[in-house]
Length: 254
Image (cartoon, rainbow, N blue to C red; front, side, top):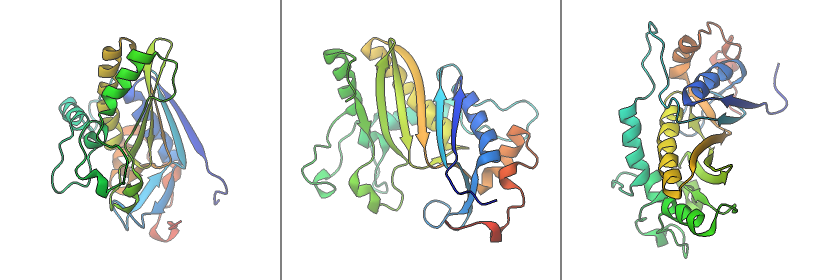
């Protein structure tokens, strides 16, 4: 039966490993299959939540997803990659072939910012500014938000997936609230969350509070077709509901 309304999904997890597994399991049952008409893997199929909210209570507990022994699938990430991703997030370095980096937007100096958005002060280290806000002005603020997205990103062939890193200090802990416009569940989800968790731990220590939760929101949390079989193996779902009788003719381009 065709859906008439969006079907939001709420995942409450203990750590990153638990969140990843629960999302894999849920998307195989509740995801929507469609053909990609623009973006990564254009012309292929994608399995996607209509909308997802993922709450992770203790993201520092298990950052790396665990693949049980005997499963013939690779881990989606490892600690070496996440440590490298942390460096990507906290440095402004960018190659000539890159339109942007998250680190450039968070902490680095934008090259020729005037050509991108006139009269907008973009040369700012948002991580250090948020730390300074909390240390100087206390925790009673809703203004400590770090932005990745820019208006001119709409013209990019591959605009940033992560758009907002919002923060809150409550009950003595620093929490991150994230928004991803699009988010690869198999590989991107655990690596992104691992790196951002390390950023949060650094900021919490600098501010002098405890490390808190991550709440991630996305209207584009998805699995590309190449990872469907991997997800089925990891979750032990042989014939999941979302992929039953999927054929090219049945995939809508809407």
